[in-house]
Length: 380
Image 1 (cartoon, rainbow, N blue to C red):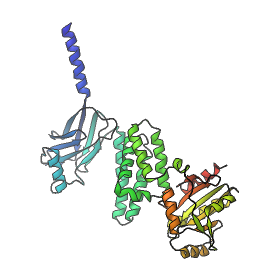
Image 2 (tube, one colour):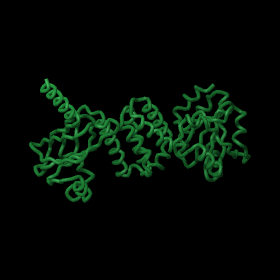
Image 3 (cartoon, rainbow, N blue to C red):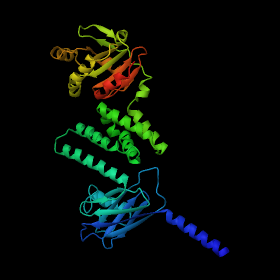
């Protein structure tokens, strides 16, 4: 009986040990004859093996972490590097290996993984891996935008805008993904990206906000989701927060050069729709005809206005002489602009918003003009 119990316990322990091990195996095509070693750098250390018949197998001890994206890469080489430090040095020296092309990156997202590696293209295909599929799509989107920038088709600022926009299109297909959270968190935490993200087009800011709302409804680690939401809020005020904020009592200048307070307009309608723009803002001017069209067919209790933030008042007046509008327009000087920016966190143009004149609070803000009619339909 003791022997039986001992055997059962031994089997149970053995099964436990086996379960706490991750297997990564694969085959390599298009391999140069000089390549003899394969190195693995993962979330749980470094390993190196000699290749046999263009195949490999790694065993990573421990369980697969479920609350993070587990990045890894393999490096094929004719030389053997005994530890991570010596491999990193070789990659950074860019003599035999290069950091830009030799690491074949992938994500470990299962206890048993089979890789099909292309030794020439330095890519790995993992069948059935959703995270690796998403990662490939993100890399492809980034590569296409970067290529356009390198060819001089995009300015640096446009490249940053388009890169985030194209990546966002991929992320929107994966709201239930830790990689989506990781990508957005890195973007929102990166000091280099801060200015660029604040100057994103309103439709991109809004799309990211909608995506984060979807993420919050998924069964994902709460700590990661909360971290993302906090990072987002450091850059942008959400519509929920804005609903508790009053539009500041800024002074406006009319085309007749009269000065008034924006609250003077509150008696004229239940809601005021505001377009914050400037003559130097190409997208602002491009959207004026659509704004004017919507204003012309709106409800009587909704008033449409434009607020120019041009540095020189004459630029604004001269533009409206050549391009008169059917809705009221006002100019805002730099002191009032600062009050508006500090209160509302406005960083990009055009910015559209809707004010409830009964309370002075914002109803909506930072939305693309394509959604204006939808929001107007919800007003009392």
